[in-house]
Image (cartoon, rainbow, N blue to C red):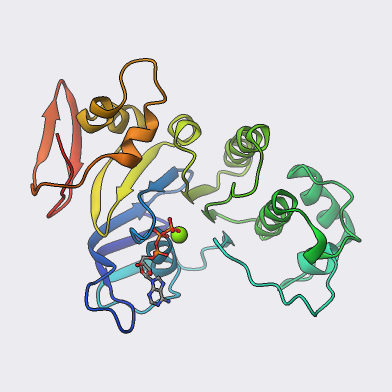
Length: 259
Ligand SMILES: Nc1ncnc2c1ncn2[C@@H]1O[C@H](COP(=O)(O)OP(=O)(O)OP(=O)(O)O)[C@@H](O)[C@H]1O
Ligand SMILES: [Mg+2]
Protein backbone atom coordinates (compact mmCIF):
# COMPACT_ATOMS: atom_id res chain seq x y z
CA UNK A 1 0.00 0.00 0.00
CA UNK A 2 1.37 3.40 -0.83
CA UNK A 3 1.89 5.77 2.07
CA UNK A 4 0.05 9.07 2.40
CA UNK A 5 3.25 10.59 3.73
CA UNK A 6 6.64 8.97 3.95
CA UNK A 7 9.73 10.55 5.47
CA UNK A 8 13.18 9.07 5.14
CA UNK A 9 16.19 9.91 7.29
CA UNK A 10 14.76 13.28 8.22
CA UNK A 11 16.91 15.81 10.05
CA UNK A 12 15.88 19.33 11.01
CA UNK A 13 17.82 22.09 12.74
CA UNK A 14 16.22 25.34 13.78
CA UNK A 15 18.03 28.56 12.99
CA UNK A 16 20.50 29.49 15.70
CA UNK A 17 20.63 26.11 17.39
CA UNK A 18 23.66 23.82 17.24
CA UNK A 19 21.88 20.56 17.90
CA UNK A 20 19.43 19.20 15.36
CA UNK A 21 15.90 19.01 16.72
CA UNK A 22 15.25 15.88 14.66
CA UNK A 23 17.85 13.46 13.43
CA UNK A 24 17.53 10.39 11.25
CA UNK A 25 13.76 10.09 11.56
CA UNK A 26 11.97 7.58 9.35
CA UNK A 27 8.21 7.93 9.40
CA UNK A 28 5.23 6.85 7.35
CA UNK A 29 1.50 6.97 7.62
CA UNK A 30 -0.77 4.80 5.54
CA UNK A 31 -4.40 5.33 4.53
CA UNK A 32 -6.91 4.95 7.40
CA UNK A 33 -4.20 4.52 10.03
CA UNK A 34 -4.33 6.31 13.40
CA UNK A 35 -0.78 7.11 14.46
CA UNK A 36 0.07 8.98 17.63
CA UNK A 37 3.38 10.65 18.36
CA UNK A 38 4.29 10.91 22.03
CA UNK A 39 7.38 12.32 23.72
CA UNK A 40 8.54 14.88 26.26
CA UNK A 41 8.19 18.64 25.79
CA UNK A 42 10.73 19.87 23.28
CA UNK A 43 11.35 16.42 21.81
CA UNK A 44 10.50 17.61 18.29
CA UNK A 45 6.92 16.40 17.89
CA UNK A 46 5.54 19.62 16.45
CA UNK A 47 8.67 20.05 14.34
CA UNK A 48 8.15 16.56 12.90
CA UNK A 49 4.52 17.33 12.08
CA UNK A 50 5.50 20.59 10.42
CA UNK A 51 8.29 18.90 8.47
CA UNK A 52 5.87 16.24 7.23
CA UNK A 53 3.54 18.99 6.03
CA UNK A 54 6.39 20.82 4.29
CA UNK A 55 6.30 23.83 6.64
CA UNK A 56 9.93 23.67 7.75
CA UNK A 57 13.17 23.27 5.85
CA UNK A 58 14.93 19.94 6.16
CA UNK A 59 18.62 19.73 6.95
CA UNK A 60 18.69 16.35 5.27
CA UNK A 61 16.37 13.54 4.30
CA UNK A 62 13.25 13.48 2.21
CA UNK A 63 9.49 13.75 2.67
CA UNK A 64 7.09 12.38 0.10
CA UNK A 65 3.42 13.26 0.19
CA UNK A 66 0.85 11.54 -1.99
CA UNK A 67 -0.05 13.76 -4.93
CA UNK A 68 -3.13 15.87 -4.22
CA UNK A 69 -3.36 14.72 -0.60
CA UNK A 70 -6.16 16.56 1.25
CA UNK A 71 -5.03 17.39 4.75
CA UNK A 72 -7.00 18.81 7.67
CA UNK A 73 -4.50 20.35 10.09
CA UNK A 74 -5.05 21.55 13.64
CA UNK A 75 -1.80 23.18 14.77
CA UNK A 76 -0.72 23.24 18.38
CA UNK A 77 -0.99 27.01 18.51
CA UNK A 78 -3.18 29.26 16.44
CA UNK A 79 -2.66 32.98 16.52
CA UNK A 80 -5.89 34.93 16.28
CA UNK A 81 -5.58 38.66 16.02
CA UNK A 82 -7.55 39.95 19.01
CA UNK A 83 -8.22 43.32 17.42
CA UNK A 84 -9.84 41.72 14.38
CA UNK A 85 -13.43 40.71 14.98
CA UNK A 86 -14.24 37.35 13.45
CA UNK A 87 -17.21 35.09 13.99
CA UNK A 88 -16.97 31.32 14.14
CA UNK A 89 -18.96 31.16 10.91
CA UNK A 90 -16.48 33.33 9.06
CA UNK A 91 -13.53 31.44 10.54
CA UNK A 92 -14.97 28.19 9.18
CA UNK A 93 -14.97 29.69 5.69
CA UNK A 94 -11.23 30.37 5.79
CA UNK A 95 -9.44 29.60 3.61
CA UNK A 96 -12.18 27.76 1.68
CA UNK A 97 -15.72 29.08 1.54
CA UNK A 98 -18.31 26.62 2.87
CA UNK A 99 -22.12 26.71 2.94
CA UNK A 100 -24.19 27.31 6.10
CA UNK A 101 -25.48 23.75 6.24
CA UNK A 102 -21.99 22.31 5.94
CA UNK A 103 -20.62 24.67 8.60
CA UNK A 104 -23.50 23.93 10.98
CA UNK A 105 -23.09 20.18 10.53
CA UNK A 106 -19.36 20.36 11.27
CA UNK A 107 -19.98 22.29 14.49
CA UNK A 108 -22.67 19.83 15.56
CA UNK A 109 -20.33 16.96 14.78
CA UNK A 110 -17.61 18.32 17.05
CA UNK A 111 -20.00 19.01 19.91
CA UNK A 112 -20.42 22.77 19.60
CA UNK A 113 -23.66 23.25 17.64
CA UNK A 114 -24.99 26.75 17.13
CA UNK A 115 -21.79 28.69 17.82
CA UNK A 116 -21.77 30.33 14.37
CA UNK A 117 -22.39 33.90 15.47
CA UNK A 118 -19.95 33.87 18.41
CA UNK A 119 -16.68 35.76 18.26
CA UNK A 120 -13.67 33.45 17.91
CA UNK A 121 -11.72 35.32 20.59
CA UNK A 122 -14.59 34.95 23.07
CA UNK A 123 -14.67 31.13 22.95
CA UNK A 124 -13.44 29.00 25.82
CA UNK A 125 -10.30 26.95 25.17
CA UNK A 126 -12.28 23.74 24.75
CA UNK A 127 -14.82 25.35 22.44
CA UNK A 128 -12.02 26.77 20.32
CA UNK A 129 -10.37 23.35 19.96
CA UNK A 130 -13.66 21.90 18.77
CA UNK A 131 -14.10 24.71 16.26
CA UNK A 132 -10.57 24.05 14.97
CA UNK A 133 -11.43 20.39 14.51
CA UNK A 134 -14.69 21.33 12.76
CA UNK A 135 -12.71 23.48 10.34
CA UNK A 136 -10.20 20.69 9.70
CA UNK A 137 -13.05 18.28 8.91
CA UNK A 138 -14.62 20.66 6.39
CA UNK A 139 -11.78 19.98 4.00
CA UNK A 140 -12.98 16.35 3.66
CA UNK A 141 -9.45 15.31 4.57
CA UNK A 142 -7.75 12.07 3.62
CA UNK A 143 -5.39 12.81 6.48
CA UNK A 144 -6.16 14.64 9.71
CA UNK A 145 -3.10 16.07 11.43
CA UNK A 146 -3.80 17.09 15.02
CA UNK A 147 -1.10 18.57 17.22
CA UNK A 148 -2.25 18.26 20.84
CA UNK A 149 -5.88 18.65 19.84
CA UNK A 150 -7.37 18.00 23.27
CA UNK A 151 -5.66 20.88 25.04
CA UNK A 152 -8.30 22.73 26.99
CA UNK A 153 -10.85 19.92 26.81
CA UNK A 154 -12.30 18.51 30.03
CA UNK A 155 -12.01 14.78 30.78
CA UNK A 156 -15.33 13.74 29.21
CA UNK A 157 -14.44 16.01 26.30
CA UNK A 158 -11.14 14.18 25.80
CA UNK A 159 -12.82 10.77 25.72
CA UNK A 160 -15.55 12.06 23.39
CA UNK A 161 -12.89 13.62 21.18
CA UNK A 162 -11.08 10.32 20.56
CA UNK A 163 -14.40 8.56 19.96
CA UNK A 164 -15.20 11.21 17.39
CA UNK A 165 -11.82 10.72 15.71
CA UNK A 166 -12.44 6.98 15.47
CA UNK A 167 -15.91 7.63 14.04
CA UNK A 168 -14.48 9.98 11.43
CA UNK A 169 -11.94 7.37 10.44
CA UNK A 170 -14.62 4.68 10.23
CA UNK A 171 -16.95 6.84 8.15
CA UNK A 172 -14.50 8.57 5.83
CA UNK A 173 -11.47 6.31 5.84
CA UNK A 174 -9.30 9.29 6.78
CA UNK A 175 -5.95 8.57 8.36
CA UNK A 176 -5.10 10.45 11.56
CA UNK A 177 -1.72 11.65 12.74
CA UNK A 178 -1.87 13.01 16.28
CA UNK A 179 0.48 14.42 18.84
CA UNK A 180 -0.89 13.79 22.27
CA UNK A 181 -0.15 13.66 25.96
CA UNK A 182 -3.39 11.85 26.84
CA UNK A 183 -1.61 8.55 26.93
CA UNK A 184 -4.25 6.33 28.45
CA UNK A 185 -6.76 7.27 25.79
CA UNK A 186 -4.16 7.35 23.04
CA UNK A 187 -3.26 3.76 23.84
CA UNK A 188 -6.81 2.70 23.14
CA UNK A 189 -7.43 4.84 20.10
CA UNK A 190 -4.21 4.41 18.10
CA UNK A 191 -3.12 1.73 15.67
CA UNK A 192 0.49 2.72 16.14
CA UNK A 193 2.39 4.80 18.69
CA UNK A 194 5.69 6.50 17.90
CA UNK A 195 7.81 7.66 20.81
CA UNK A 196 9.97 10.56 19.76
CA UNK A 197 12.93 12.11 21.51
CA UNK A 198 14.77 13.88 18.71
CA UNK A 199 14.79 10.50 17.01
CA UNK A 200 12.31 7.64 16.92
CA UNK A 201 12.96 6.04 20.28
CA UNK A 202 10.50 3.20 19.95
CA UNK A 203 7.36 2.49 18.02
CA UNK A 204 4.76 -0.19 17.58
CA UNK A 205 1.18 -1.07 18.35
CA UNK A 206 -0.08 0.32 21.67
CA UNK A 207 0.04 -3.22 23.09
CA UNK A 208 3.65 -3.67 22.12
CA UNK A 209 4.78 -0.27 23.26
CA UNK A 210 2.87 -0.42 26.52
CA UNK A 211 4.39 -3.84 27.20
CA UNK A 212 7.89 -2.42 26.82
CA UNK A 213 9.93 -2.91 29.98
CA UNK A 214 10.39 0.80 30.61
CA UNK A 215 6.64 1.12 30.69
CA UNK A 216 6.27 -1.62 33.27
CA UNK A 217 9.26 -0.61 35.35
CA UNK A 218 7.77 2.73 36.21
CA UNK A 219 4.16 1.67 36.70
CA UNK A 220 3.10 -1.66 38.10
CA UNK A 221 0.02 -3.62 37.14
CA UNK A 222 -3.22 -1.75 37.55
CA UNK A 223 -1.65 1.69 37.56
CA UNK A 224 -2.06 4.26 34.84
CA UNK A 225 0.86 2.68 33.08
CA UNK A 226 0.61 4.47 29.76
CA UNK A 227 2.27 7.39 31.46
CA UNK A 228 5.41 5.34 31.76
CA UNK A 229 5.85 5.36 28.03
CA UNK A 230 6.01 9.08 28.22
CA UNK A 231 8.18 9.29 31.31
CA UNK A 232 10.66 6.53 30.60
CA UNK A 233 14.31 7.41 30.99
CA UNK A 234 16.55 8.03 28.06
CA UNK A 235 19.88 7.13 29.54
CA UNK A 236 21.68 4.54 27.54
CA UNK A 237 22.63 3.90 23.97
CA UNK A 238 21.48 1.03 21.85
CA UNK A 239 20.44 0.31 18.34
CA UNK A 240 18.68 -2.97 17.99
CA UNK A 241 15.34 -4.67 17.89
CA UNK A 242 14.54 -5.65 21.42
CA UNK A 243 12.49 -8.71 22.12
CA UNK A 244 11.72 -9.14 25.74
CA UNK A 245 8.94 -11.44 26.78
CA UNK A 246 7.80 -11.77 23.21
CA UNK A 247 7.15 -8.02 22.89
CA UNK A 248 9.39 -6.77 20.15
CA UNK A 249 9.68 -3.07 19.69
CA UNK A 250 11.92 -1.18 17.40
CA UNK A 251 14.62 1.20 18.59
CA UNK A 252 16.06 3.91 16.48
CA UNK A 253 19.71 4.79 16.18
CA UNK A 254 21.22 6.17 19.39
CA UNK A 255 18.04 5.51 21.30
CA UNK A 256 18.73 6.23 24.94
CA UNK A 257 15.94 4.70 26.89
CA UNK A 258 16.22 2.24 29.69
CA UNK A 259 15.35 -1.45 29.87
N1 LIG B 1 10.82 28.08 15.01
C1 LIG B 1 11.75 27.66 15.88
N2 LIG B 1 12.94 28.28 15.98
C2 LIG B 1 13.89 27.83 16.83
N3 LIG B 1 13.74 26.77 17.64
C3 LIG B 1 12.57 26.11 17.58
C4 LIG B 1 11.51 26.51 16.71
N4 LIG B 1 10.47 25.68 16.86
C5 LIG B 1 10.86 24.79 17.79
N5 LIG B 1 12.11 25.03 18.23
C6 LIG B 1 12.86 24.24 19.22
O1 LIG B 1 12.90 22.90 18.76
C7 LIG B 1 12.73 21.99 19.84
C8 LIG B 1 11.55 21.08 19.55
O2 LIG B 1 10.37 21.86 19.53
P1 LIG B 1 8.95 21.24 19.21
O3 LIG B 1 7.97 22.35 19.26
O4 LIG B 1 9.04 20.44 17.97
O5 LIG B 1 8.75 20.25 20.46
P2 LIG B 1 7.47 19.44 20.93
O6 LIG B 1 7.91 18.00 21.10
O7 LIG B 1 6.33 19.69 20.02
O8 LIG B 1 7.20 20.06 22.38
P3 LIG B 1 5.82 20.30 23.18
O9 LIG B 1 5.43 18.98 23.82
O10 LIG B 1 6.20 21.30 24.22
O11 LIG B 1 4.80 20.82 22.22
C9 LIG B 1 12.58 22.85 21.10
O12 LIG B 1 13.83 22.90 21.75
C10 LIG B 1 12.18 24.20 20.56
O13 LIG B 1 12.65 25.22 21.41
MG1 LIG C 1 4.53 20.55 20.25
